[in-house]
Length: 216
Ligand SMILES: [Zn+2]
Figure 1 (cartoon, rainbow, N blue to C red):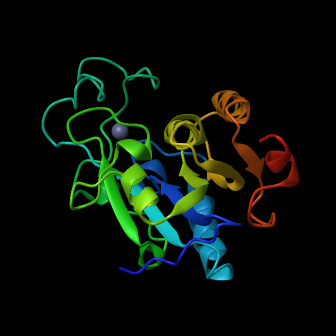
Figure 2 (tube, protein in one colour; figure 1 turned 90 degrees about the vertical axis):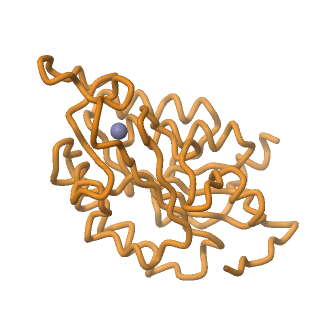
């Protein structure tokens, strides 16, 4: 794989696509609007073929046996949709595959998380060689990321917060995410905003805004 060189004046940007998988669109844990988001992410990439130096996509990828350390609700209990969930994104099953409206041929690096345990952030995921996302971005000279995908209130939230913690400039593209509920999505957006994540639509010009620069 070759990476675009980073320029000192404008750090290379990566697109982080969080968990656009069948179970989160049409399966056991459907997110309202998920199919539209999948198609819109593909359209965004096709319309901006040179914007991103790297495109990384994650998959929740759970073990088929057991409860993945309490992540799946017990057969005798209802999920609480906060800490316990219906069975979802079991490795190699149809529900764990990317939704077909996401053109996965546009993805450079595929990472997976949640093998045997809960994992919300893409920064907990690893590529087939076992390398984590933070290392991959660092080695590619990435200084800024746009975060998109599912779901705003859980895995997108956790990914955005971890991206800030990793020292990256972070934008959440608000028209390319969807959440489980409006209330928890609004709370997640407020938390991301407070952590310094810029909330913008995908049509906004690439790169940091003047206000972000002024805040440094
Ligand atoms: Zn999961």
